[in-house]
Length: 336
Ligand SMILES: NC(=O)c1ccc[n+]([C@@H]2O[C@H](COP(=O)([O-])OP(=O)(O)OC[C@H]3O[C@@H](n4cnc5c(N)ncnc54)[C@H](O)[C@@H]3O)[C@@H](O)[C@H]2O)c1
Image (cartoon, rainbow, N blue to C red):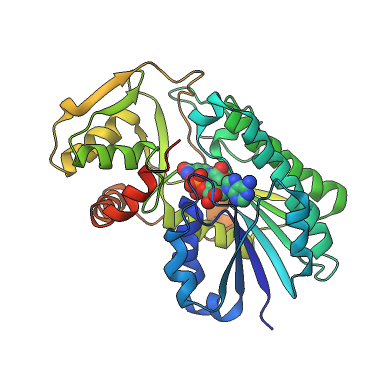
């Protein structure tokens, strides 16, 4: 019987791309079964992965809320467990400012429940691995010309979202140090690509731009983020899961820093729409200025690097949103 990897949160943006691409690679599908668990929150869209699940016997789905320890404990029965790749989270910074509580419940308590499950599953497989997907936002904000964050940088999160992710990172590290659980953490910069929920900057700019609707930009739009195409991120996640050293953290970034306003203008130019659609709105509370990660360690230890240039990735993304209007309508109807 093939070993089973549990994937959490794969009805969401990054996880659905993982299911639709990495989990379909021939040698990976031959070697593993994947059990996807997700409780399908407003941004967990089953339709994003339905076709893959319907057409692939090595993929299966179970609706589970990771906040609920007894639902998570049901997974103790899994035969031949290999590991967990943990994507599930509340992920939208703006929502965390409006309602932090659920971020603590999902991102911290949910991760704790999965770590406890991992200790149980390790009883059947001593190498059982827990890969935790984290974010560059846990490092806090960089000034304009500071060096990008390395993995050794102290964590200094600013928003309720990044604090909840930092809390879960610390818990994962504590399970490595206290119980010698085989853990790896990846910290990635801003992703873009197909299936991203319309509340985020890039899909919102594409969708609103195509339909001539206003495109809101926080403050003066000069904040900087590093951008990575989602498939590059997921290749890094798989490299970290299969090659990462236990107890280590790996940064995954696109080496592609851009100001928010540059992103909006770039997309509008590609879809042939006027910059007049951009409206500047009151700045996000506690808005971090800049994020960027140093990816040397991942390049050296995981033999990984991002491959997709921004023009290539953004054109693919725009095409995907143009061709998937039904998905866009489905997602827009679920915005909270
Ligand atoms: N999007 C980015 O740019 C980015 C960058 C760095 C790191 N990350 C991290 O990557 C991971 C995935 O991000 P995303 O953008 O795909 O998020 P997303 O919000 O699109 O998807 C999150 C998924 O988790 C599921 N989920 C939420 N609460 C759950 C619960 N209680 N039980 C079970 N499932 C639950 C949702 O239904 C959804 O399918 C997150 O851990 C996030 O912190 C994201």
